[in-house]
Amino acid sequence: MKGFIILLLLMGIFQTILPQSLKTVSYQDGTQKLNGLVTSNAGKQLPGVLILPAWKGADNEARMAALNLEKEGYIAFIADIYGEGNIPSDNEAAAKLSGTYKNDYNAYQYRISLALEQLKAQGAKADKIAVIGYCFGGTGALEAARAGFNVQGVVSIHGGLSKDASRPNKPIQTKVLVEHPAEDKSVSREDLDNLVKELNEGNADWQIITYAHSGHTFTNPESPEYNDVMAMRAWNHTLLFLEEVLN
Image: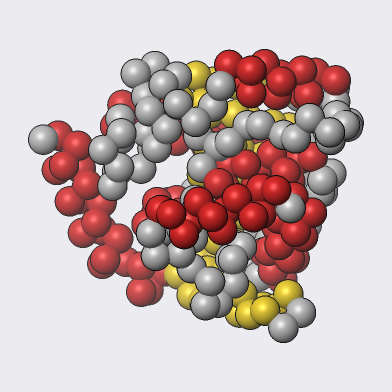
């Protein structure tokens, strides 16, 4: 019941302020039109946060994160990875489409790079940028680190942690925070161990925080796995990390 009440409150806030606080920014990958979302403080020369959404695109969790980051003094930009006309309508379609980008990590990294350029074009300071991502977007946050993008930090929130074994471990220059739910059935112990090995071999500045009694989508108020206590802790950890790397 408590979680349900929180969800209603969040949805009420979301519906009230979204139209006034986020605006669409269209950009291109060749002939493919992409539609990102940026906070209303765009153009003010502030630190920036790129948000990589979960597997269905710019959902309410990503949008609320953007609005809350704006309150903290960041320009937030929600990336469009799939492109106009390609937003999945159900879990099956989302799994198929996100799987395409997980397998073709170069394409995923390129779409992330385009979104980073848009974030800078919206006023974010080029030397004060971080990437956060949820679920599929959490995988993308790690891909941003693996790609060596010039960002100060990445946060993977209940993201997929695996990487194809044929890909070599490379140096990782950016700081990495992984927020991992303890009961995430989509991430194996081997995945977690391999990520630690990758980060250590890359000589990364990294930390992994594990949240007890939490399933995969524990930070999403619309999910049956939502854990309000752990979600708040994860958000506070995200803000602490961003404060360190961007201010």
